[in-house]
Length: 428
Image (cartoon, rainbow, N blue to C red; front, side, top):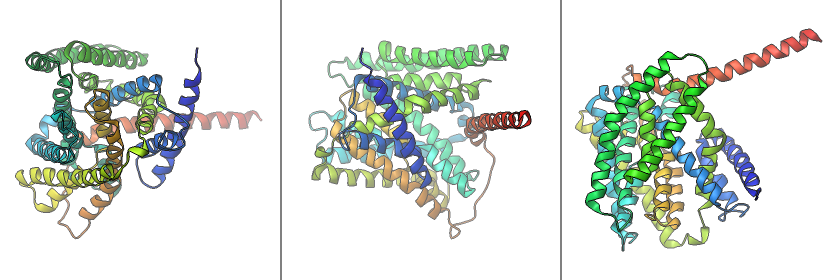
């Protein structure tokens, strides 16, 4: 039996956390540090590690857990109440970037032999990472503004629309697939997910209400359900496993123990699965492939990624009657791509819909949009713009629940530690 995987995991966990802490000190998400760790450790850096089958498989679990957690944190009922404004903004924020990505890919001949490769670059640009904008707005005291509410709602709907688009595109990755049969399978998956999803949601809700002891059972069975649903989606419907994971999260969301399950899933994620996923992306990058064509493609991709979100979401906001300053804030708040774009890109590589040489441009696009979003948000929310309107939203409360739960857990641990110290002092 080979034991080298232990060394690989240890190095990845230590490096991703260390660089994550460093990037956080300069007001950047820790995911940027995790990506840098993969780049430094992999062929593009010192070549200490290389991608192995073990890392690939654990990274796939990391993707599934991230999408499961995204589903857990999505409140469908509140999204319905948030109305058409968020939906229109999200829809335009998907259509315009999709068209922009397709055009860029077509100009560079990425999909010369397969138009789906052009389409897939467009799919990558549709993603939005809500966490970057939310943390920035919270720091600025603008999270509870009308534009902040629309950004949060639109980003969540954006993920759902992106998942549907990804499902459709990846389902046709196999050139030998029967298009009519595949379309029937996709429709059947979403239809059955809607029908059985409601039944399963009620079943989970009843079960969770009846038991208040040993909450760990809910986390274990929920994660098992996530993996099972992911397997069924991929194996029987030809739908991406991450789509199944997202819908599994939706099924359990809004139950009495959803916050607890999400907090336990987060622990599993940051302790092992997510670091290996983000590091595995960096391990795929090979610098010799970064010729002038790739460099120019990267620059154009970054520019298009920024402009299409601002224009698309800003136009959607204007269609909803928002004044220009608020439309600009909403457009800027939707720029950041984050981990969602990386998840989509990795799925494309595994299905042969995107060449590995384009993973570096995608990473750089994610990093640049992540860095530039907080800067631009502070500009568009500056005092020279019109007055800010504040309002209450259950979506904001939902977003904060899991984080508050984690803070409370850490506070209890600190209190326990202080009690132990006091006992030791008294005994001495």
